[in-house]
Length: 213
Image (cartoon, rainbow, N blue to C red; front, side, top):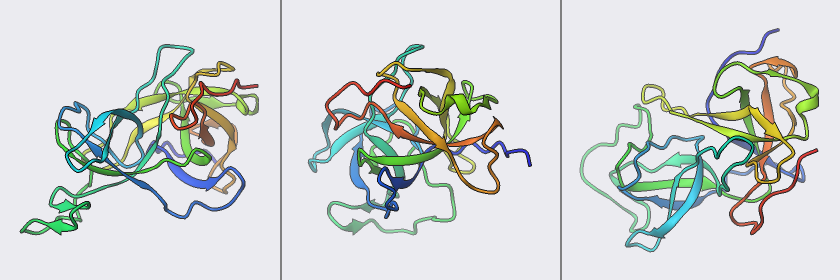
């Protein structure tokens, strides 16, 4: 059965030792100076400083130049609605429209939860710069870049994917490919394969990543 083309960012599924991901995430802030909308499933990086409540800033992750990449801290799992203050534990008057796509618009201050454990394994679709990529078994063990596609304000889903068009053994590439998702709706080779990756160049690891094989 052919795989379905469904790019929706990165989803934490387990830890490297096989233990399940239990939903743990860290609260981060986003500055109004951030010029790119942020969606659940987006890769993010640590940014300079923090907000007045003392919460560290993050910005959307971006691909580096070909053959290299930028370090990252984790993946967004949730957007805090604008009317809620998770630090003070308060909410402003008025209803929160939870039936509309939840994302943080560009140039808007807010809060996000980020799965930032260094050993997390993520599910993501393999692409070639956002387009179809025919995944091969030989790609397992390689490092690859991130394709920082724009999310959908209609569905609220991330547009990011693993860019296997930019792969290799370079240690600074941001993701390491562990294998393919073992599920009946996912064919290991061919277009639109869902793969398992780890952040190879994690900002809390203090290094520049590990070379692929």
